[in-house]
Amino acid sequence: MRSKLPQVGTTIFTIMTRMAQAHNAINLSQGFPDFDCPEALRERVAFYLNDRRNQYAPMTGVAELREQIAAKVGSLYGCQVDADQEITVTSGATEALFDAIQATVGAGDQVIMFDPAYDSYDPAVRLAGGEPVHIPMLQPDTERGWAIDWERVAGQINARTRLIIINSPHNPSGSVLARQDLDTLAELIRDRDILVLSDEVYEHMVFAGGRHESVLCHAELKEKSFAVFSFGKTYHATGWKAAYCVAPPALSTEFRKVHQFVTFTSTSFIQYAIADFLRDCPDHHLQLPDFYQQKRDTFCRLIADSRFTFTPSAGTYFQCVDYSAISDMPDMEFVSWLCRDKGVAAIPLSPFYEQAPDTRIIRFCFCKDDSTLEAAAHILRSL
Ligand code: PMP
Ligand code: GLN
Image 1 (cartoon, protein in one colour):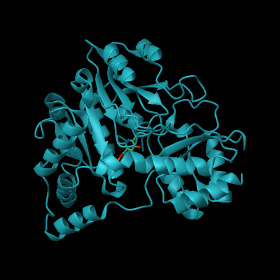
Image 2: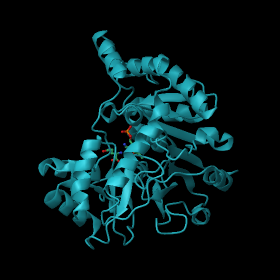
Image 3: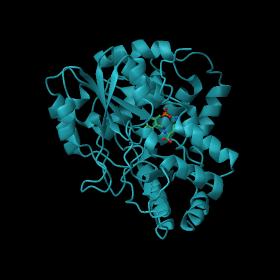
Image 4: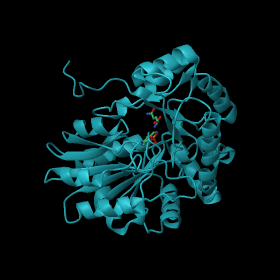
C-alpha cells in the first residue's frame, strides 16, 4: 500500500517502553510518572463514573471544566479568556497539536519547528500537505546552551511560512524560553500571516524560581497563538489523555472544525472530575515546580559521580546527559545496550532530528519514585 508517511515508523517512546518491558529494565525512557495522581482527583473520577456521566460530553468540552480552566489561566497568566469561545478540551495535547496543525496548514505551507522536536509535529504537518522546516537548536556545548537561533529563523521565514511551533519547557532538552525569545518571535512575525503553535504541556515544571513564559502572557503573541496544555502532566495521569487548547475566537473556530471530526469530544467523567478538582484545589499546581525540582536534584546528585556529563535541566521532567566518556556507540545502539545489558531504558535524541548531529546525548525521565531513581543511578554509576 502507498504510505502517506513513508519515513515514519513506530514512535521511539513505544519502542523503548516495549524494550524496557521485554528486558525487565528500569524504565526512564517514555515520560510518565511511576507515582499516582492526587487521591481527591481519583475519588472525583470514580464519583462521576458511578454517577453515570457516561455519554458524550459537549463537543468543546464540559462547561464547568472550561470555566475552571479560564479561571486558572486568568490567575496564572493574567489574561482574560472566554470559556465558550477560546477554550477547547481535547483528548491529550497530541490531539490538540494535530487539530491546530490540520486547521491552519495546507498544501505548500511551511511550518518551522526546532530540532530536537517532539516527534508528533513533523508527521502532522506532512499529513496536512505542509512542508516541515526543521531548524536545529544551538547545541548544549555552545555558550547559550540549548537555545533557538533567531537569526537563523529570520533567514527561513518567507511568504510560504504559515506556522511556527515552539515548545517550552522543552522536551527533550529541558531548556526553557525567556521573555526575550517571545519578544523576538513576535517581532519576526509582526505584520505577516504567520501563526504560532505553543506546546506548553510542561508549564508547571520550571526550576530555580524561574517563570514559565506562556504565549498567553504576551499580548501580541496571544492574538495569533494556539496554546496547548495537558492535564496528563499536571496531574500525573498521562493515561487519561486530557488536555486543552486556548486560542482567540477566530482560531478556536477553525480548531474546533477539526476537533469535532478527530475525536468530537473527550472522556466525560474525567472532565467533570477535573472541573471539581480545579475548583476545590486551585493551588495544587503551585507545589509542582518544587516537587519536580527535588526529583531533578535527586537524580542529578545520584549520577553526579558517574561518567555521564550534563547540565541540570531548567524545566520538564527530563534530563539529557552526554555519554561520550562511556561509549562512542550511536545513540540508538547505546540505549539498546543500556536497556538489554544493563537494565536501564532511556530515549535517544536522534529520532527528534531531521538531521541528527554527531553527538552522544540521551534523555532520562526523572518523574519517578526516589527508589526507582536510586536503583537506576546505581547501575548508571557503574558504567
Ligand atoms: N508535547 C510534548 C512536548 C510532550 O512531551 C507530550 C507528551 N507527553 C505531548 C505533547 C503530548 O501530551 P499528551 O499526553 O497530553 O497527549
Ligand atoms: N511525551 C512523552 C515523552 O516524551 C511520551 C508520549 C508518548 O509516548 N506518546 O516521553
